[in-house]
Length: 346
Image (cartoon, rainbow, N blue to C red; front, side, top):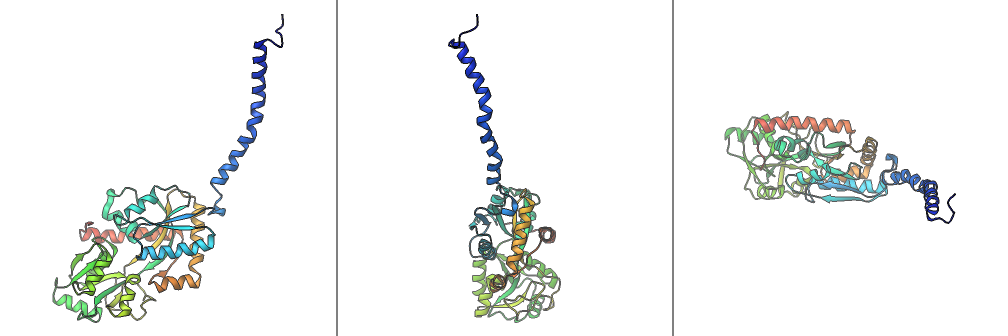
């Protein structure tokens, strides 16, 4: 006998059949929404950025890397119409902040404001002690600025030129001292390159930071110091310090009357620092190319260039490929100095 429509088993079969038939129809709008949601959370590169971007500066506020990073962040914020936050994460010669970017999501919303020390010196100085692989953890975006160093002495120092300094040092090897912001930093290595090129022997006095080193130079406790033009130009213009030369291949617009080391009789001693932007490895190439293009366009604006020059920096954009080549070339160059002089980190 056929089951009655009111039979409980019949009602359960009918209900199950209705679920099988209607569930796909009910889920269709939800499933169709997933691609749209994915597009919302991961926008196309040409729409970048759609929300705030964070620039991590791996040093304390006020230094050359921080100043240049903040300036370019402010200009890109105007261009993008999105907030660009500057997050200072200092510690361990920049390693703390660099590591944070190495481990960040590679979506273009966390970028690194780096310098020659973090990307070209630390990999040789610290080697496998670094918590990231410096060669593979980052995608270079663009150079932002070059930071030439000035060879500084106190206003009371007897040498008025680099040639006079070299003559004094050759007459009394090991008599004169040079300060640095720390063993293995770019100012220290610049002084080592200078000594080798000039054929002189100086005594290294490392400090924990550029501020104390600068203060002791002005106080006459050390004889000379290489420091960025950005950090030192104010002291030079005020007469507290004397700049004998700049370490770049061309004169600094911030100190146009100060000759280069090559002009001062010490060729082959060019050195200094730079500031640039990098992203975590794996960041879409289209985003990297867009940021690089925007940096180049921003640095071409006269008031941006003038603001950097006023701080002692030299604006200099690049392609990602050119920036990668610079990082690798400096890594080899400073690596040779570190190994030859058997330099160890503090």
